[in-house]
Length: 295
Image (cartoon, rainbow, N blue to C red; front, top):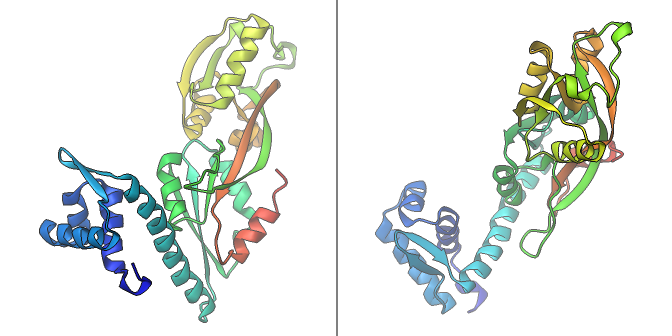
């Protein structure tokens, strides 16, 4: 098929249907009729000389060729988004926009500390989004985000060559209401006697802590399991329990004396990662931000 014959509108319609997995939903998003959308897809299939979809009930499944075409379409439309942003930035527009996604269970304090080197810069506009890693990565892939902050790494593969770098590794602590000096917390002897506030089982912190308790042969009392660090911070402050978390999560409460760090838990850490994708034009402000981290 000659390059000049590729109809990018047909390719865009295919891309939208592939993303939605449903002709009706894609037609609603595109504000076209289902019949018109089906016709455009058929024309693209004729040009490719291959079927791109298999109908499975009311949904559409990509064929093997369809998955290949989708990979190219992802790159084409991501590059188009980057092109518009790059031209706007170089066309006399002084304000740089940095779009950062933060995984919901990553400490807000950590995110703020990470972004601090560029906060307040007059020529930088920050756009912050929150969501699950599964929600944020597709937006990163098509350049609707410049960076994703996560406490879980991702691996690059043939379909998506993520750039994942560790930007911080922080020890995990036990914190709670201030205790008198005569009743200082003893680790691990006092663990069985306190009401513990722990991250959920999906957390690497929880996994490492459970393994440590098993190694020490200690039975613990779990008062609450919380996936969201902001909620864990509130419970640590208000419930009277003892929370397992990185000190950065409760840095303000520790500074004010509302909470006290009882101990650093040995061999338990939280890692923080910055995830990005290859771009033709790397943002200067993003370079500055990443260069300020030690990992």
